[in-house]
Image 1 (tube, rainbow, N blue to C red):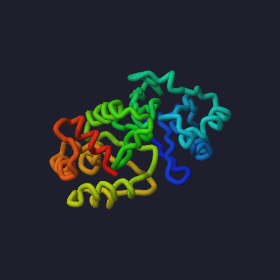
Image 2: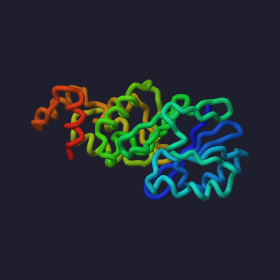
Image 3: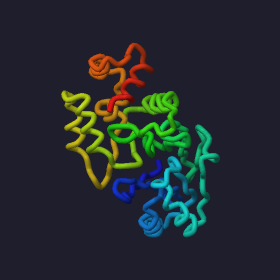
Image 4: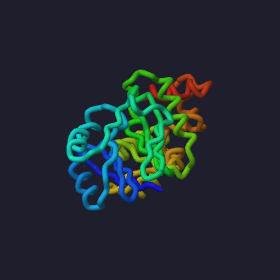
Length: 233
């Protein structure tokens, strides 16, 4: 199984290294100096540099990493859906997940999912693409992953995300429980956590349906519930 290393940079961004014993790939490598130091310390060869999407806050490390190593750059065009990236005979699977942007992708390996700005810990990204249907389908796809899947997001938005989740579901006891386990130095959730705390994965739950009804929002179908939930501010 491959390993995941998380690097914080800027105010709340995360960069990631997926690596085995000798090879690695960088995802959203804005913390390029720390990444190069980690590679050197652990005698790792950087094979690939890529991004979860092309927003500027996720791409500032690309040129630095490519200049300092012999890594190949994998842009969106080279990352078709279900594409397999091989690192030391282990697979990193590409999921195209349009919604936040049209070029959003997630990377799945072992029981770990690097989600960029598609799925955060406790919320989801803004639908800047305008493709609400695509975003809905992307989230549904991720929701099908096992409960033990670890979610590594593109930003640490946990406190603001869960404040909003508590606003929607003030009686949700799991929100405080998750906050009590939060570690600033290593931020992740599991899919089981998300099913309990993230309103955007709970659009079929009775409490959310009742909330939509109370706000006179359409909720007869799953798609209506998604659209209605996305409209609440």
